[in-house]
Length: 559
Image (cartoon, rainbow, N blue to C red; front, side):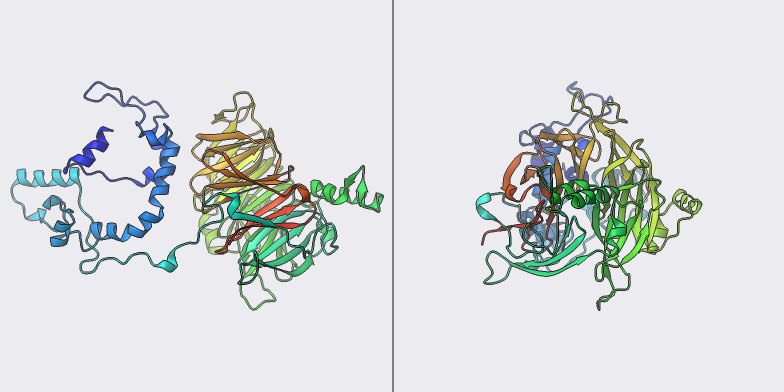
């Protein structure tokens, strides 16, 4: 409080806010309990005293601070700040009119210190510069910096203003899947959005493509069936559990067994099959040089398989040196990095079709272990083997912007590693008795079922006891909530602080990321359990919801 008053009342007290003021809550806490001494009034220095609106939480302070920095008001007035710091209002009469004048020694080129012959004067000048700093170089001298262009503004995300009255949920009648249609069978186990194209993968490994976008005269949106195709060599690609589920089909011609629909049984049998999309340069049938790759794992041969999106032909099948079933995979935002987790208690970083990046970040241990195992790289390169777990990996999450991989194993251990260096950062778990986050290997941890990471440095873990926990990548517990449901899908909206979940209760629930408070619920339980979720990247953002009966529902804004 005293520092704040001094900055606002004293012309000689000028402070600069470091980037950590918008990104790192830990700078306000003395977590290691270092003896930081006392003030002149004999008050012990420990944690930073935050303003009342932060509610005593460093995470809330950083969150609101960052929201203010990224607000529309700041964006619309940013050019005025540029004029004051780097532009035409830094010096001269324009600076005088803007009350933007500082001590003359702070300006670049105001004094040539090499020409000062008096030692006392030289030391005084150097001391002033070292203690009070210097203004930046003046980059724009004549004209004011232009304001932000209108076309550069990003559209409002779907969940910016959470209100069910402004949203609608529709299930298009004409689809390839569903109880009536026979083009695709079983639950939608994975959904992917590329531009205005939606790709839904059913439990019989049928890939259905749809076109989805807003169009004039189309209420509430334009939805069109494109193609339904089956992955190449389906029978040879099925997982152990899926092969066993075929026995239900053989033993019951009407598709039911013990009162349970076969498609529902098929969905539960292949929950461990994971799909992702990456960019690659495999030869394709289209005119584009670059083709997307459909990557999947969970097969009987313990391999990661890559299919071309154009032809669905199998392009690559490899285990990356894993010594067990590959249980999960996740591809980074840019599509050139992937992480896999396995029953062998290790995770591996893959570089997808980017030889220069692979040579830059691959470590010697990964190279030697792969050579020893006789592994031949084709279009994928193993750059790092991530250690730290002692039980099979359950789930993984990757954020290339933060350069982190988060992984969780059956004993409840959560490990955090750097992507490009492969270095272990920390291990933590949620204690089964106290429900607190402990930074150590799990003795009494709760198994983690799902993980997602937000670029603000928060990851959310869904535990086997039906609870959600928001934790910072620095190991600080932010918030928690017991939702009483086993989740099948969990995603984060990257343009807002929104978490979206779907599970066995058949409702898509939308949560605030910072405190995990429930904002609204979208009921689609008439279609069964929610099995997959995806957000479209288009300007008019949609939420696609896949259900266990094979139907796709779309959440959109009312117009």
